[in-house]
Image (cartoon, rainbow, N blue to C red; front, side, top):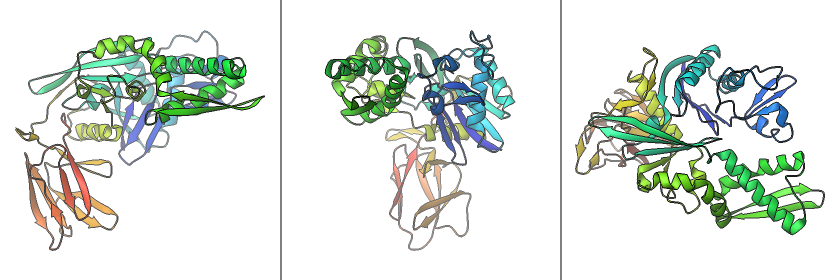
Length: 416
């Protein structure tokens, strides 16, 4: 069995397996003569063949007959099943930890569980995605889906962190942002070149194909260029930070009102959140979700049996780790190396190699270093002669362990 996190967000569905396999797809589906196609291939035909395309099957996951009959799909659930099969097909005997948004209701969750079992894949647990992603400091998690934004509020009570409530903002979704950007580009080209890229399906598709890359570039740059092949030659439109701010502000009004009471470090941005966080908004300094660490946290919860399939229910509350809290910070629970988190509450053996550090659980006689954490104390159980190490003063979240020329960070997977 291969343990894998399946994170549901129709803007960007993700599968992250413990063996390193990583796959992401957008929630678009297209019906061709051979079957159902999902992901980017479906997105790239959505505007040229809209009668055969669908991007609402996750948002409206159900088994109601489609208004237009398709050869390979009776309802939205068939489309979701096709995408799940595609995403899980490369994983050998998948054992799925399902991460779902608070907006997914119980009836939809029941359908989804049935689809995953039919893939076939084993389900080892279900958890609210915001709860799994959030760190100790986060009180609100923002995830932007294709057709809405979901704000999930969390609260810490005693030794537990739980979902308090959630809010859906239907006007603010990735599709709405793409549509506004497309209209903005169209208006510019009509003014400067008398060319409307939204007039014909082929040019409309070309524009929508260019928008995701441009917005991704603008999360780290002040501008991006969209170039389109037209009968008059290549036409280019420059998108600036100011352009995007003007486009997003009307759509984001309700969002800004909802996050007004939170400081930036209390808000975590999930999939799609980087779009609204990149353009001079109150979210500019908020953390982005690290999905690899999120997956490792989920794997630890499964392996410690904090999450289990018996009974199979959505986890919306977790007990906090019994780690020692001191004036210097929260005790670390894991050591990160090459994207994988290793628990510190049991001995770890480390080998110093030319290309990095290798780690294994347990006390290995041929290792260069064996460490173990007890609260905020990181102990050296064994160190080979001439092995250069630098132990942090305290084993707290954010501290670093130096082994030779390599540095490994200590982290706190709070609910593990």
